[in-house]
Length: 148
Image 1: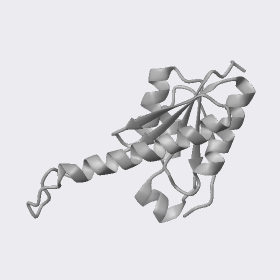
Image 2: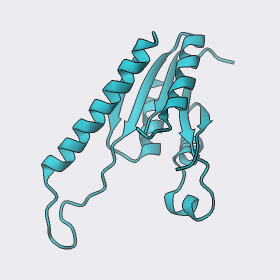
Image 3: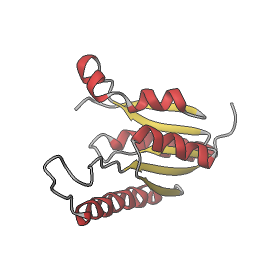
Image 4: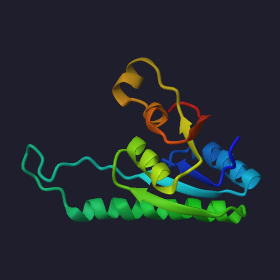
């Protein structure tokens, strides 16, 4: 197995992020690797809705700032465990953000949670993990988390 130096960690701020971070910190310690926490901030709001009501730019900026603040809190948590980590806030769909970051960093591993939705929920919501696995430039470790 090749040495793991850079790990991309997908974080979604759900209550299930803890087991994903725990696994990432364990791997980072074991391989003396750096973590790169990625959150996809993908707000799909047209500039003008069908009702011709403009979405205030301030709304999107506040949401972006809130996401950045939550990412910073996760970075501090990881740093408190003695692991080097960097945050990345992306404004594209989650799977693309994760794969793009792994490619850009030439990451050796991606760690992400998966809820294992099946049936209609899987069809309607899709699977970020599945799309990431399909396009990832490196190995992907999925951490099973309870469904919502």
